[in-house]
Length: 192
Image (tube, rainbow, N blue to C red; front, side, top):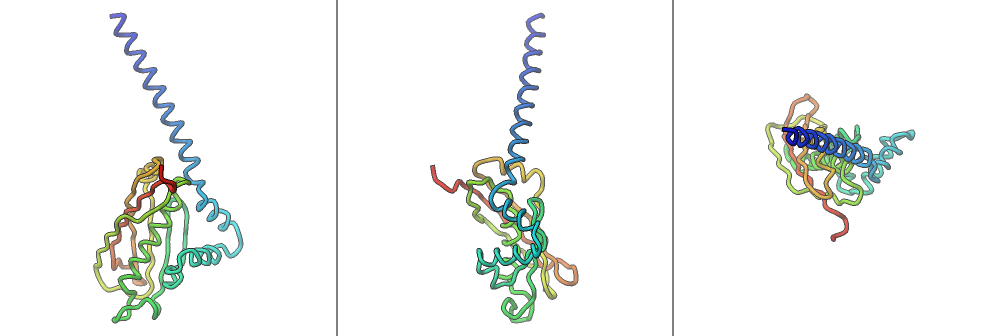
């Protein structure tokens, strides 16, 4: 009997210790997670005058296709990214709405920026899969919002992995013309 009580106490102590170590590692991860270079750059730019202009300028320089589509960042945090694409001649299809490729560019940009804000520092983000379901004709400019769920953010503790991000797209009538889901993977920049 005495032996069983001792064993239970040891298990409780071990469990408490593991819970403590796990919570400490999680807090260390959460404090480091958002301090990759992309996050630091975006945070420093957001404190400056003309922050949105600077963000959009640097995004267009880094990704020329985003500049061609005139995609604009509206909000960019590690929890949410909102972007917009105007319905202008260079991205229109034959019926005068934003072309399917423009809609997909919008979804990839929103989800990619969100993934990029959360990946570990020495990792390379790669789009693995993108599912797009066209529901109805769009009207005017489109806005996309990608939100990182808390359970998805925990996945970034790993050196490599993947996360699926839902992108909510609305048009000027506040209707949803397309559903987009992007799966982003991250791997170490340097192969071991």
